[in-house]
Length: 344
Image (tube, rainbow, N blue to C red):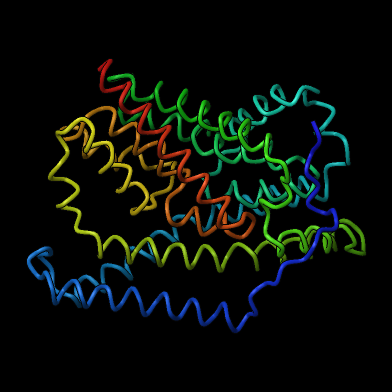
């Protein structure tokens, strides 16, 4: 298999200027505020709380998501530095199988040894890409790690035990989705096009970073924090805003329908953006009214493509790539949830 090298030269595409990106962020913020006001004006009966109260709730939720994610992002950045700077070239690669499918299967189990949530896995995955792991291999790790994480396994078992096969379906489903995505993107004719220009430039900068390992580690720390932290803040803000825009009662009203309950819980998972280490306890509160398959779908979709995770992934992958990921994860999670409902 020919692996994508993110450091390889490529025809440059125009990147938006920093001022343009700031303007886009401001416009998005204004759009959220406008949506809040419009919904409150057009359909005030959808919400029990007033607009100022919901705005306060959005701020509280955004800060909560940010605080919850920050330690894991920091740990992920540190692990990324270890992989990129301190592990000699070829050490990781020598432990990997030579066949592409076998490498992806091994990488999808790597999360067993990395106790961080989905936020921390993004900088670690960036480190793998900088070591010239292929995009498909890195995606396989990135999708599987938030679910085969040891803490996630323990908390899911604490919440559900082996009831209705939720734990087993989550583990096997996450592993299967990760390897499906890895296989699909391994067949992409131009894997380098899946990465953003900014990330390729970062790879080039890191490659030629002068100094000893300590100096390189500090430089890498600054690079990763500058890339990840703005995305984390934006993603947390979006997660808080969306939760007060979307009336949760509308999602809960369809919880007993086998198909619609899956759709509702997947939508809820993308909105609430709860860390995969604790999302099982949140899902447990819906277990009495929602189907087991919808709970499994929630536990699969949330760690992989919630709004916070997508904002973090956007630091590395293009918008088109993320759109493809969302479609694959949602369709696969719906199919897995449907099977669980049939067997439960």
